[in-house]
Each structure stands twice: as structure tokens, then as C-alpha cells.
Image 1 (cartoon, rainbow, N blue to C red):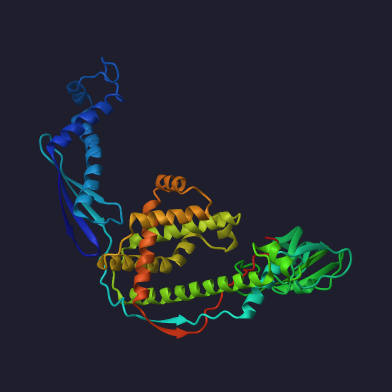
Image 2: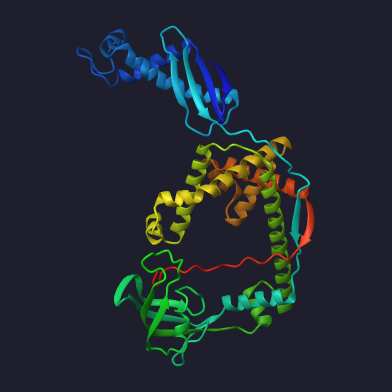
Length: 448
């Protein structure tokens, strides 16, 4: 087989492929053996018709068409490998010659990965946040541990306070009419969690068990449901139960209960170390983000639309998986946000394009600097993953191999090594202490 590639504009390549006449002859034999089992010829049992008779009956063109389906796909893949191109779209095929005794000739036009023109990517200036952890940070972490391990006590008397967990029945009405998503029974709600519409939880403070209150709230102007956006509604809420957190004393017994340490001082020292590690990690991430942004900004590349389309589909798939983990479907999400799948894809397109450019630029830097991932590094990463999932490394490797995930993991390691390469050669100046990441709650419809 012969193959030559010609690069045109717009990241398009045309491959001219020539397949030996001998391969066509073999494919014709395969085509005959396949079709003769499917076609009934008068006077012969199915599958037993001599080839000459069969060709006269179905026509030679049928055999040629089937032979082409056998020859061309494999020849195209071999041509891609031989020419070293990296297609990012399905090829447009054009048959040029299919004749008995002659080579098969065809042309494949395909979009390929674009060439990247790198700019400056070493010696980039970045601000490295100052890493500082205080005793107050440790105390705050201890309070979070207290909250996490608090015991809940059912109150027989008393009224709702901030931090209590109440069990409620509620019905929401707009202009006197119930609305979808505004009703719930035996719903557990932590007062102060900002789970419901702003103002809802505050109006339950002071309510006693068995008390029913009218709670008036106004949905935010950016609320995703157009029917409720900026609208005033009234909830009828009955408090059926109150649970209050009882916090354990911060002493050695607490340390033993929540950790592997015997004393509170040991627990505090461990928390200090972990907070420092977390702050260092955030600082590195901020530096990495800055240098990648600058390296990408300094590079030039014309990204094919097909690559952006593919990245958008990947983002949609990831989004669907996250929704499933929350017990939702894409259909429910689209209904909740009053949007279409095309709306979501359009909103993701800029991020997808940026993600593709980052990948292409990092790949180009890795090639230029001969950055690679060794088999030992890959095995080390598999072992790390196995420890996280509490799985045998050998078993996990077989699973990943069966799912064709090993190269995906190798690519991820290569990308991180390339980012580290850029960051290590950056010019750093010290900045502010990196803020700890916090979980920000969203406001779903009441009752959802």
C-alpha cells in the first residue's frame, strides 16, 4: 500500500491511497464468500453457488461494492499511521479507481490537529500566594469537626434556633395558587444552611413544635424558573419536630473519638500540618493556573470546529454523570433551568474552545521539550489510584486497560508534568495568602 499526505489550509489534509491489486482480489474473494451465503440463486443451495454463476446473477458491481467496504477502512487507518497525521473528524472518501487487476485508488479528506505556534512559556511572571496558617485556622477546623460529629437531640419543648434541624411540612402558593416544586412533607431543613429561598429559614426561628406559620418570601431576580423569578409567594409551614446539635467538649476524649490521636494537642498539630499542606497546594494551583494562562495566551493556533464540538460533547457527558449522582436527569435539569440542550451546548462552547487550546499548547510544549511519561510513572499513578479506591493495583490496571483508559491516564500525567515544567521555570513574586476553598450552596426550588 502507498499513501501520501498533502496539508491544505484550515487544518485539512488530503491523503492519496493506493492499495495493491492483490489486496483487492483477496477482498473480492471475501465479498463472494459473504454474499453467497445471503443470496438465493435458482438451482443452487444458498452458499453453494459457483462464483462465476453468482457474479452473473448479482452483478460484479455488488462484489466490488462489498470489497471496497473491506479494503478502504483498513487502508485508511494504515495510511493515517504511515503519514503520521492526527485526524479530528471523520474522513470524506472519494473512490478514484476500482477495477479488476488494478490497484484500488482513493482519496481521503480529513481535518487534523492544528499546528501550534508557541510563544514564551518559560520565565513567565506569576504571583505565588503567601502561605500562612494561624492558630485561629486550627480552631476553626476544630469547630468544623465538632459540628461534623455533633449528636442530634430531639427537643420536647423549646423553639427553633439558628443551627437547628427542623422537620417541616410546607405548601407554597403564588397568588393563592399552589405552584410546582413548592410542596413537601417531613422535610428536614437545617436553619441557617440557606438551602431554601432567602428569608424562608429566618422566619421559622422562634417557632415551636406543632406551630404553623405563614412565611412570605420573594424569589431572587436571577432565579432559573421564569414563573417564580422575582415573585412574592407565601408558604404555609408546620414545624413537626426540632433537632438540636449537641457539641462534644474539645478535649483528649474528643481527639480519640474523631482521630487516631490520643491527645487534643496531637490532633491540633496534625490539623496544622494538613492546613499548611492544603494552603501550599492551593498556592501551587494558583501559580500553575497563571503560567498556563500566559503560555496559552502567548501561543497561536487555529482550532478546528470539530475539536470544539467533541469537547462540548465530553462536557455534556460529564454533566449528565454529575446530575445522575444527584438523582437528576438531563431532561429534569433542562426543565428546571427552562433551557434546551442546544442552549447548554452553546453556553459551554467558549470553555470548550479554551480547554482544547490548553491541551494543544501543553502537547506542543511537551513535544518541544521532550517531556514524556515513563511506564514506571504510569504504574506509580495506578498504584496511587488503587490505594484511593482500596483496590489491588494489578486488578485496577486490568480494569483500566479493558476500558482503554491507560492512555487517558498517561495523557493526564503528561499534561501535569508539562505544567510543572512551566511553573518551575517561572519568575515568582509573593502575594496574598490563598483563601481556603469553601462549599457554596445553591438555592434549588423549595421542596426539591
